[in-house]
Image 1 (cartoon, rainbow, N blue to C red):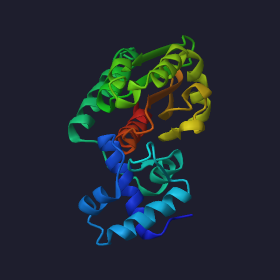
Image 2 (image 1 turned 180 degrees about the horizontal axis):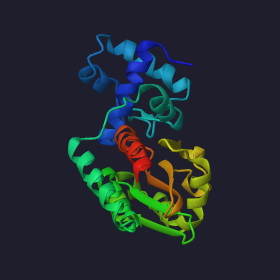
Image 3 (image 1 turned 60 degrees about the vertical axis):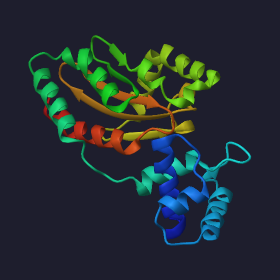
Image 4 (image 1 turned 135 degrees about the vertical axis):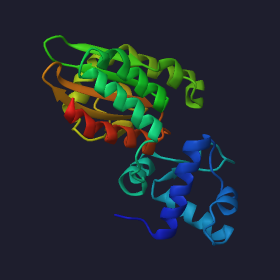
Length: 239
C-alpha cells in the first residue's frame, strides 16, 4: 500500500539525505532543503505519522529521524529510481567480462574486488561447480562507514565475514538472476540481520551455479548497487 504523496516525498527525502550524510534528518532540514512548499508544522505532522506507521525512528531524544527497515523496503519497492551505472563503470565491467571469455579465472581474481571498490561494500563472488570457490573483498573499505564505530556492530559484521563460506549457499538458493535486495531480517542468514545485502545469481558451463553478494550497513546506496547489479545481470548471459 502506497503512502500519501506528501508523506512519500518526505520519506524519500529523509532516506536519501540519511544515506548521503549518515546524520539524522530534522524537520527544519527538510523545510530548508526539500522544496516541498509546505509549512514546518505540516512537515512535523507528517513525520509524526511516519513515526507511528513504523517508517521512522529517533536515535536520540533531541535528534532528527532515521529510516527503519520498513522505510528502506518501501524505498526499494516504490521510490528507488532505476538508472544505469556511470559510463566509466560500464566500460570497466565490460572490459572484465570480455577478458573472462578467455581467462575465466579472472571472475574470482578481479570481479569481487572491482564490485567492492565501486560500491564501497564488502563483496563476495562464489561458484558451486566441481571446484567450489569463494572470493571476497572490501572488508577494510566498508569498515570506514560510521555505523561501524559501534564496536558491537563491527564485531557482528566481522563474524558474518568469518563465516561467509556458510552464508554463500543460502544466498545462492534465495537469489534470482536479477538484483535481490535483502534488508535486516530479510537476509537468508541470521548473521546478516543487522545489515543489508544485494545479490544476484548466474551460471555458466565452466563454474556452474554462481552468486555474487554485496554487504553493508542498511544505509547503503541501494540505487547505485542495484544499477550495477542490473547492468551485470544482462551481460552475464553472454559470458
